[in-house]
Length: 177
Image 1 (cartoon, rainbow, N blue to C red):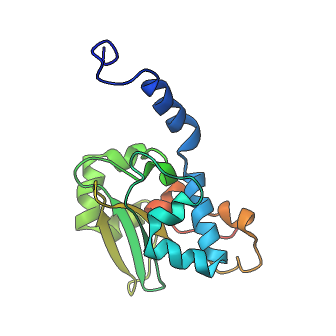
Image 2: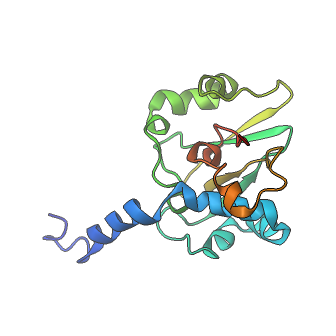
């Protein structure tokens, strides 16, 4: 119907389907984070201009504008939520997981972040501050987690395997097996 009314160009639906199925993936975000863990100059760029850093890999497009990397520290844990809907940074996170879309999750994370993280399996020490960031059309977030202990000898490819969509959203921590 949208095509019939000339509201979208020919090939638009096919193009978006291709992007969602094959190009937007948390593996992209894992590549960005792993690079930041091993390359101090890239890390600096990512923290200064996340959009430019992600564009170096070709990760651009709808929902990929205005990318802001949020750096975790030993005393700060960043978590992303969209309190109004369920938008994410599609090019580097992929589409949002089902639980991320739920109203209860979105509302509770803002009010009781530590409890929600614990329910999702992430136990943080009491001295770690949790900061919840509300993603919007003006800011698309990506969490840059603390590189885990025991990963010092790992190369970029091995580091990528430690990073999941949940880690990029901030509800999980990367772990070395």
